[in-house]
Image (cartoon, rainbow, N blue to C red; front, side, top):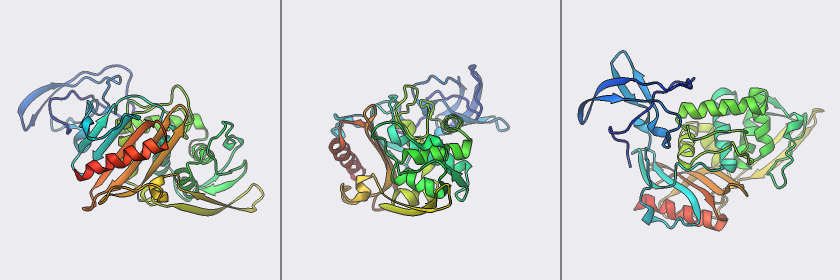
Length: 334
């Protein structure tokens, strides 16, 4: 489903006021000249219907979502058995077409899919060679949380931390990045939320950089598409997500060398799961907690190198997650 000119869009700026703005704009579309009333409302159920970029000097309104897939309802539900997941989507990036959608505007816990946003903010506002020093907050207390073993006083570059974040899904690396760039997890979360609004991901709210459960930490499958779509524009992100393993050396508080080796948590990159014929999985991000279930977002390409983003949120288990994802990717060839 593509965007059409009969939608209501909202006015957007980086620093949005809390009040509702209302304005009328005249412009020509393929359906002729029309007067558009464009109310801003942050509570709209469909993120991408809220935003435009106003070109006041020309007296026109250019849709913010003109280069995005836009959808407000389920699409092609009969194509894939997605009964073991709460939400899913498949997006053709070249044609701005939504191939499949199930509950993609439902607010859900994202688990470690959060780290795509963490990486995006870090790449946008940080320098990969900047040195990060771990505080005592890198010690993650939650039982079973994925960590790579960073200790207080350890030092590594942002580049190293991003590899550990995206390949190993290390929660301690997420805290290291957040505090290194913003001074605190709370300040970094503010940066994440500002970036979400810039992207139009207005059904999202982030509390932390790793995705461990919090009632006020949520997103949607559609918003994750918007976030992933922005992240894959960075060559470093694409380079990292397709690596099956990573080994690096950093230093402890006394300057002694520490080596860490990690493996990719993505079954397609591990070789444990196999994509349909003609589809190449470039990489992506996994996410699993009891609250979020099993989640996965991918960047893939077809035989013509056309890119696609696919996402499943809150699958019942890993078998269901990867089985349904493989079926979903199969729709690219149909």
